[in-house]
Image (tube, rainbow, N blue to C red; front, side, top):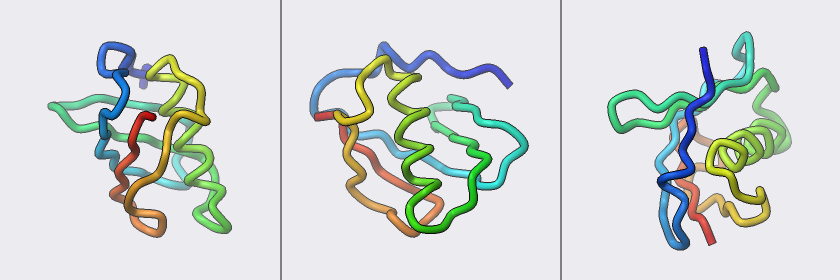
Length: 84
């Protein structure tokens, strides 16, 4: 599992639909068939998984994690992030 390079998608105002798998064996960001999948090792409690997803997605996009805003899906596996 190699991390995807999503830097080509990094433009202000862009929204990213992400499918999250918590408690995975390793952290990874994959882009498969137009879908972005993020695997995180942390458990989904107290926003820990959301913070880990934000950090991994920001790294894959090549932007600061503070520029990514969770728009929808705070308690769901399917999330939408916006790049500000």
